[in-house]
Amino acid sequence: MAGNVLKQTKAPPSERMLRGLSRRVLQAQEVEREHVALELHDHITEALCIILIRLRVMTGNLPVRATSSREEAAVISRLVEEAAENVERISCRLRPGVLGILGLVPALRGAIAGFVKRTGLDLKLACGRLPGRVSAVAELVLFRIFEEVLENVERHAHARHVTVRLNHSGAFMQLMVRDDGVGFDTNRGPVRGQERGTFGLLGLEERATSVGGSVQIKSAPLAGTQVMVRIPLVKSVRTPAVAVAHRTLVRCPA
Image (cartoon, one colour):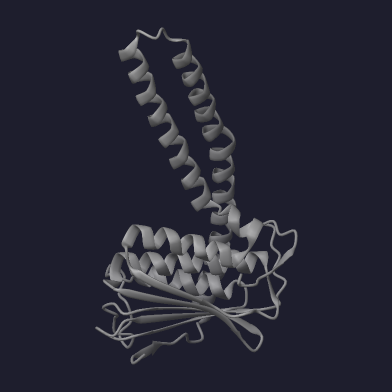
């Protein structure tokens, strides 16, 4: 695509210190997200399910002639069921279980399905076979970056088509997301408070660099935006902030 590249430059010591702090904040956020997700699943969802079961038992014990009471109980049951589904959806968003169980590609497909359902946009996903592995931490980083890029497209790009490609180049896994939206001037760079703020782009960079990766953003006004994320295929990144029991082999299903 035509456009300019938003380049990463070597940061001065003060900025590198801030970036280190940012990485620790991101790690702490993931820990808190996992904690909240488990609390929601283990306590709130469970309590709502028990309420739903007891409501259904109560409805079954109501007299046949108590039509209005049965109808009201059915309405309450539906509301409780919807609440339980919403809590579980939030829990999954905080800590996507499919990522740890099935791997990166199914998690990406799930995020894409939700994006297409919300926006109605045309999104094409192309996967190449990956010859190596990334750590579970790196998978999570890549998935979080992907979520944020899709959110930017949804909120700001005014795009009609989005292309996503996952493949490898040398010793790196590459995730490319390209849209045909309004784009922006990378020579000036996004300004904080405008549509694609500095904090958003710094967040992408900090996540990628935390696992030895990089982000390249290519864009131009009215020419769309391309985000390229590169993560080392084999990299053991283990921090006390995120529990990692194993590495995951990522393959695109046929």
